Image 1 (cartoon, helix red, strand yellow):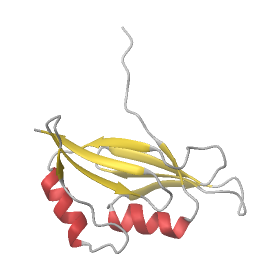
Image 2: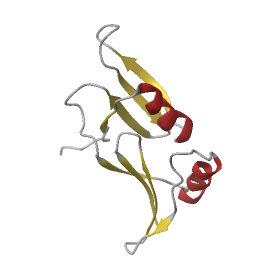
Image 3: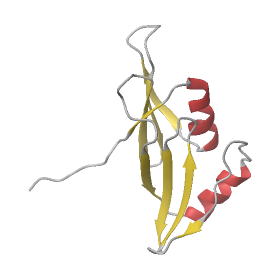
Length: 121
């Protein structure tokens, strides 16, 4: 019987410094790898935090700006506190309780991608 594995979204980025500020400094991800075909080629990098892995790409055609992904979280209230405590000037997300019985924190990266962190009640 086939068994599906984890999903690794590829999100488009247009500015490496802004991507690092948002994903590493604000969200707390760490760089797992960086790849360029040569010194003047677009960057493709893998980042991770705990069991969540994302790929960020400058390559035209990789990802589509404005994507929306959902990330399951254990401890959403603490994650929200962590984000707010950083006082990131471009994003101060709220903590929402939804009608479908989840608690959610949604952030928007500098490239228009939405990341919703959620925990089921």
